[in-house]
Length: 112
Image 1: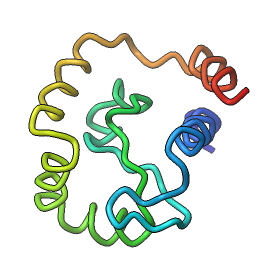
Image 2 (image 1 turned 30 degrees about the vertical axis):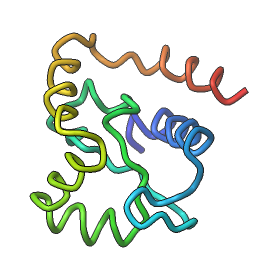
Image 3 (image 1 turned 90 degrees about the horizontal axis):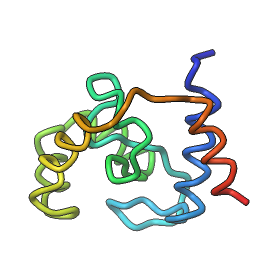
Image 4 (image 1 turned 180 degrees about the horizontal axis):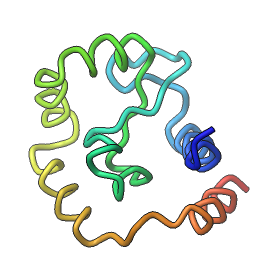
């Protein structure tokens, strides 16, 4: 089990509470997965930033987002605005390292 598992699950719950279980690409009401615009591996400080996350159905997450990254990035620019990627990169430089204990408390509070 990853050290992020609990926090990832809480973050997903917060996102579902805020956005509902709707794919942001196809707009269908179905189970969705958390998809990071800038990858959590390459951009760990953006892992829990709401503006770096899309909720996508399995098809659009695994078989579109990951298989067609250039097309996906172009769609994000259209869907979220041209400046988002630059804004995320600037935000990443300003953020401290991820504090999982603090985030767990914040996410639990948001779910109340």
